[in-house]
Image (cartoon, rainbow, N blue to C red; front, side):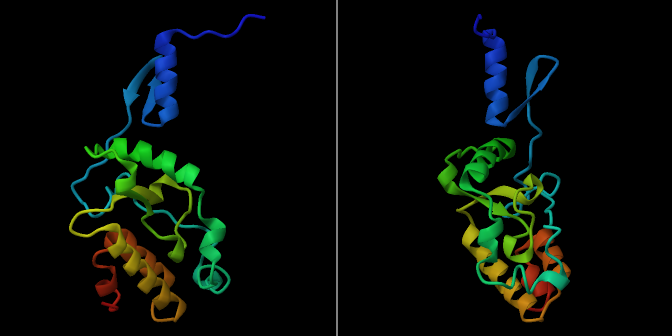
Length: 175
């Protein structure tokens, strides 16, 4: 039996596709759709509009997001998020491609029932700049507390953070 041998062009295209940043069309490689950096520290809403975990609703928060340790049960493995981060750094056209400089962040956080693996809910958030990733983490935790304490509705908190996490607390009167 002869081994399967590909042409060098086919190998290059297959490697590019495996890297996640390119797609194949009629035998040639083309760049993936570009995402804009114009809204930083927010993601490009056309690339990452956010997505929800259907298992988390206002009626299920007591057994999901308000249960200590629940997010660990749904958090995707680093092998998944790291590969996605590499692809999305390319899609955003970041000049800094060091993955350590980005957090693969859930726009709608797991703490509010964001979809764990949906690329529409994950993006490479820079760890530097005027509002670093740590600032968003603080907002996420405050919103979760408000939802679990009954001071905010789940859908309102999700909508506020997906629209603009920098104003979410003020929008809900929690600032």
